[in-house]
Image (cartoon, rainbow, N blue to C red):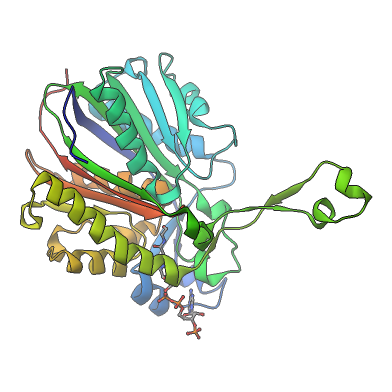
Length: 340
Ligand code: UT7
């Protein structure tokens, strides 16, 4: 979708936060039947971070948000809207309001987006709509997940993949526009391939007299059909990127950075290969953090800014994919302009 610009959305600053505790492949191989060799060669992951029990997702999200605010030279009261993308929230009714209180953004309205690994991308696109219509001036988008609390630590096919983290971006209404276009998709028929589903207890579903009693149950651990999700990502993400670039009449040669959700190094390479994008343009930090779900894209984006990799005029193609199943692309051309 090519955007007709009413007001420009500019990425003013980013931030990120990860817990200090590192879990190496070696440590994991003492918990489940796995090895550093298997994890490294099949996923590219070397270690991931784990949030200690006494900390909450709001602590992580607030650290990332405060770093973005500092980098933007903005005060919390300048923020008009907070979008928290998370699938491991503190409260099923939403956690953005807790984040609003934690960072003292007293003028901001806040809401959650629950879309797992695509969450931050959807949040950024949603925020840009509010900017472009002129509704808000400064929007904070945070992607945060602590899936370590939702994986089954005896299931080697999933517990080796995920890590905890948070990343944030602030977008602002400015004259120049960084957000060129996007594409978003959902295939709900394949939702079963990756889920944390709610299961009723047997009593609640039996046909006994208890049928009349209120149903109860609990959430299952995260379940994923890795092979199917892998095939879905490698097949759909390049198509989504090509479609977005074609509409904008941008060639893959013009791309400065390909920033994909960090799910598997093999997926990053396969997508880049299909698009003939050289590996040096592919952003990757999966070795250090594993798959941090909604946090993976903003953590990687923040790292690019911190390292000075992104320069004025660079075209960054950002693509997310995951549970839902959902996937999408956002094309950014970053303008190194002063915030107003
Ligand atoms: O963020 C949301 C998006 N998520 C993704 O994009 C994840 C996409 N999927 C993947 O990245 C990969 O499918 C995985 C990394 C999850 C798995 O890699 P794979 O190459 O597809 O392995 P597999 O599931 O086909 O398993 C191959 C073998 C099996 O053994 P057999 O049946 O061949 O004897 C598994 O039991 O590897 C075994 N295996 C392991 N062995 C050692 C599975 N997990 C492990 C493990 N350590 N941790």
